[in-house]
Structure formats: C-alpha cells, structure tokens
Length: 111
Length: 109
Image (cartoon, rainbow over all chains, first blue to last red; front, side, top):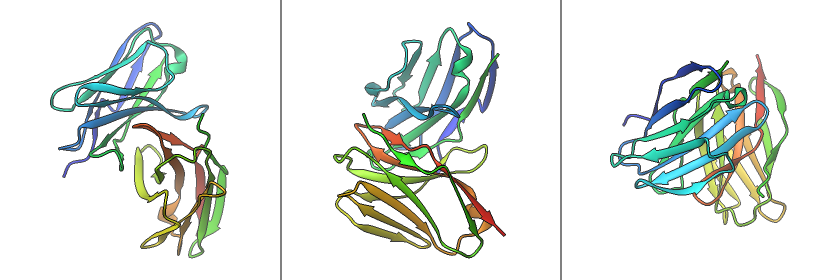
C-alpha cells in the first residue's frame, strides 16, 4: 500500500507570494492533518480535515488555509508569505484517528 | 494548553540500551506515541500506547507509561547506528497530536 505523498518536495518563494501544497493520503484514509515544523517552534498542528470538513484548527493566522477534496486529497495554502513561514510542512493521514502516518514533507523556503 | 517535554540530546554506544524520556501534561490523552525522524525525512510512527496500559513491547522497543506521574519512556534494546535520529513523543488531542521538542539520539560505533 502506497504511503502518504506530498508535492512538491521543495519550494522557494519570495515574501508576499502565495503557495499551495498538496497531500495525498494513504488509500482509504479519510482524515488528513497538517503540521508545521521549524527549528524554533518545533512541530505545530495547523488543521485537520475529515470527509471534506475541517474538524480542528491550530493557532495559526488566517493566511493559512486548507481544504479536502472528495477523494480525500488535501491542499493547504499560505497567502502573503512571510520569512517566518519557512518550514517543513508535514501532512499525516489516518484511518480511525489512532495512528497518524506522515508523508515526507514539503520544505518551503521564503526569501 | 498541552505541554510535552523531552531532553534534547542522548548519546549511547552501539549495542547498549537507549532510554528516551518524556513528560506530558494532559491526563485526558487517550494515546501516547513515539515517532522517529531521520535527516530530511518525515515522521515514522514507531509505536503507541493506550493510556490505560502500563507497558507495551514491540521487538526492540519497550514503552513504559506512568500515568500518575505523566511520564512516558521509550527503551531501545541493542541500539544500532541506524537508530541515530530524532525521537518525538506525542500525546493525542482532539483529532491532532501535541509533540515534544524531540530527543536527538546519537549512537557511537
């Protein structure tokens, strides 16, 4: 069974631009969560989607948004990029919420 | 809010046992997890324990949970150089996980 895939793996953007990251969960998994990982703040929860509905949201500004499609694939969008948004963005999928399986991440660099 | 703490570094010799410790604050967490992250990679789920269990063993891995003290530990037996990585403990929230800072394990050949 294929794991969680994330595209692209690497991105370089400049301040003020926007970016869209994509996540394809493990087949059959309907829950997708997003996390931001930075050296200073560690791993922080962004949001979680289940069957196209956002069930939970972390403490991030409204520039961070997401959505989930009917095939469970998810995208997250960051608008008006800031230098501090440089991070590894990780997506995780889950079947029943107990075990979350992570993708390899998208490394975003904001210049 | 939830606060999960780990020591930052641990060094062990190849073949010895490693013990990585974690303390958490939310006594209502249903599950507690251990993840491994190698350089440039995502998080790999190693094992998890239900909050009403004291111990779980899975091959070289042993998880101990002291719910009274809110203390979780991961013991890796016969540590190998391939075990060098950052290890995160996490507690379950409402459809999300709260992670510790991570412990960087260095295995000395």
